Image (cartoon, rainbow, N blue to C red; front, side, top):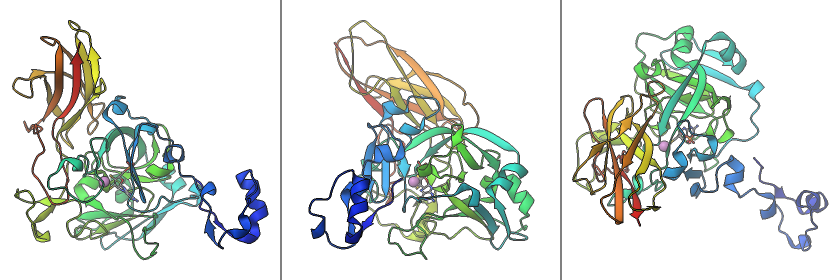
Length: 406
Ligand SMILES: Nc1nc2c(c(=O)[nH]1)N[C@H]1C(S)=C(S)[C@@H](COP(=O)(O)O)O[C@H]1N2
Ligand SMILES: [Mo]
């Protein structure tokens, strides 16, 4: 990624080299000017993303996928959504990277280099679904502040790393440990070095889940910079905000971690349902843990046309936080009748599951195809936007696509 070049007028000559052209009125430039031509404003190129990705925000960078881009079983980097709370770090030297374990409930503070971490502990690879807690926020009414995610803040990539639990065992934790909190190197947007953009965590039980990794590879390669190079915590099935990118410190806590975006109402929903628009006191808000059941139709793209008499083959993915998905249904009559889709087993626990169906339409005309998944506990996706909440989290309403039979 390019740095911003604050330009000194005295450096005009060398800048012409970088720009590949003379700055004709360069003498008029204010001092310390941020020259547009030296910025890299193309986020697609910057992050290696597909042009069809949707940019929601540039300060900080946030972008999401459209449903049809998420058709692969293992999501390739160009279609992986980007969510940042602060500035994306630059110029990371992997060889210099360390991770420190500290906090009230470690027996002794301990630091590992990345090399030590990789050589001391066994490596595991899991396919893990990560979804932003705010995915679907766009549909809430009254609207909730924050990125107006539609459906595309979710992906399922392969992560390779060491088990956080193995490292915690090696470090040694006290019997009063209840939570871990991550700390990372990304900087707060305000530039204030004392503020962290985000520092969340999970209970000890989730930290010890076999699939909870300190990962150094995504899809068999170094983690792309924007997704947490060189080291990332990955907690599959939980709000992706618990999967800290660029992690350099894990605090083992004797209380619920109280880092940035753990307190107040961040990543929390009302402990009991509330009316739309109702104010909820912080003490009546509960931390989001496992994500709810959800699904996406990833083929065909919404707006597909099909000749009369032909079957439409649809496919997509369904996931349910820490649970397995037990059934997926589709409807072409606005949810009056439902038919079962075929559903594959997950590649491993916490991975999304492929579903497919072959649909007959009774006559030419406009249809909407809806998908609805049910988890292992029998809980179903709601057909429309579920329980309103002040921060607009956990919208797991049915996904639908438009289809015309002609
Ligand atoms: N260090 C750090 N980790 C972070 C964040 C961040 O801003 N900084 N954002 C979190 C949130 S809210 C989400 S949804 C996911 C997004 O991961 P992605 O960018 O790989 O899609 O990262 C999480 N981890
Ligand atoms: Mo998020």
